Length: 470
Ligand code: NAP
Image 1 (cartoon, rainbow, N blue to C red):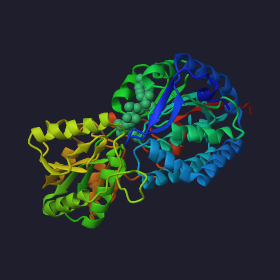
Image 2: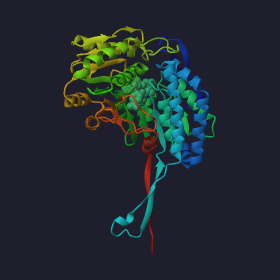
Image 3: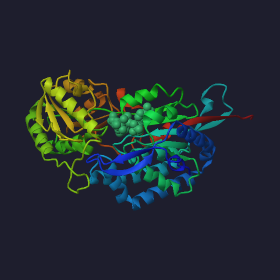
């Protein structure tokens, strides 16, 4: 197994700091363009080996890593919490989910089959027999964000290996250390040299090389819309998966179980300090429930304990850096200057931004349409359900949505009408299991993740047809 980061002489490094206080966490090599090109050459050379790896070897590698990760889950959680934005409790959940993602990947490797084709449905093809099977694409470049720095890495390398591809991983340069720990677990297995490589480096320096090279067969990207669009302009003719941002809505109907809706939406709003593509950014509440729901939502937001991520009782950590917190502050201030009402929060200290709730946000505010990617939620009131659906859809994003009601007919109606990749009934947008198809419509992306879906995206059907002479 080759890890580009460790085989190249140190010329420059990326220093990783704890976003809450700037303290040193570690450093990684900062790859340059030549390193990226070398990684591609290694991946291309190993593609034939990866393609021929039997399913039982691919499964065994993935299960070994899942087992090792499970054994060391606390170490991994500590690293997620130190270099990233999650509290230790949030980080523990991510480590466990990553074990699951790898185990599901191993399981799916055994199901990577095709099916026979009924050629005789076409007149003149009565003597034809055939089938298709799914073959790996070859070289996959995987680019991941900072907010789930372990599990979103597993969502790409698990399926890529399960499908028989080679994969080059470029993790976010502010959270590369936990990704490196995961790659080191793979290095202890029998996975052949070059099948999995880690390239740590700045996206703006090596990104173009990795995504534009014609020897790369697929770019699987999770991150923000602006980088996503930049990549799309560079890739040329190759497969692309884009898991981008959103500003997810929740629709609370008058008959909803209010306590349950509060539990789900408060958690979805402030998990990972809102740095979550499934973040509950906009809540539409039916008139009859508005006063009760909004008061209770604000009360809960006010009690969220923000602070040191490694303290067991901390409920919310910082933004990834002060620049990100300043951006949230700018979006909130823009709304306030245009007449929005601040129901709670609105304060920043360094990289920390308070849990914030706004009402009366007009459509000309940036935050009404953009992704805030921070702990800010907007409350809206509606009377007629059609009005709520129209408002929820009136954005350029569409990842997931939540609907809260006891009325099955209404649930179906709203769920069918919301423009997004997944609707959670009596759950917030922030519900996901790692085996379900996952992805967005509109500006939220292209393609689907969720292990089986990703394997599908990372393979291509090849058809075999036999002309039998009877
Ligand atoms: P980001 O700034 O777009 O960065 C994502 C990755 O892209 C990083 O590894 C970054 O590397 C790399 N990159 C930067 N410039 C590049 C270039 N020119 N070519 C290739 N790669 C480049 O996103 P982020 O701030 O980490 O993540 C937040 C966003 O991700 C939010 O919008 C969130 O909603 C979205 N997200 C979506 C999902 C989903 O499944 N739909 C899940 C999680 C997050 P550097 O670190 O070196 O800049």
